[in-house]
Length: 136
Image: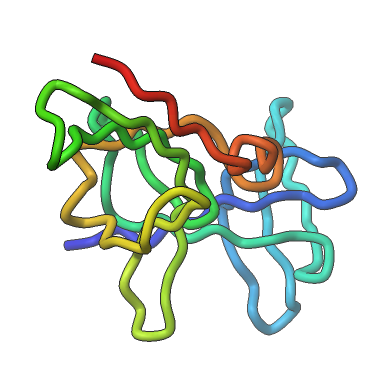
């Protein structure tokens, strides 16, 4: 059974936190801070990132809005690898996909064991400018 979990980007504080509960009636999330105190944030002050149910090649959970490094071997040149930085997003049909400046969109589920979480779109958007380093 897939676990439903969320992280949240706190816009004002510019930090990523784990969401402990969501209160749709009140329109807020609750987190438990480092001191064990419950803190509440209204939906307007956050960006929710849902857990995809998938883990990267190192076993780290992948959330929408995360950035991953994807290294793939060239089809035309065996032994030549290209590094792509991709954003994890959910398309209109509900599938989690990868997109980046240097790739066509592709399914996350088929590539989950080939990607490595390197950050999130809010803290590291500069990484999407395109890493396409060839290596052998």
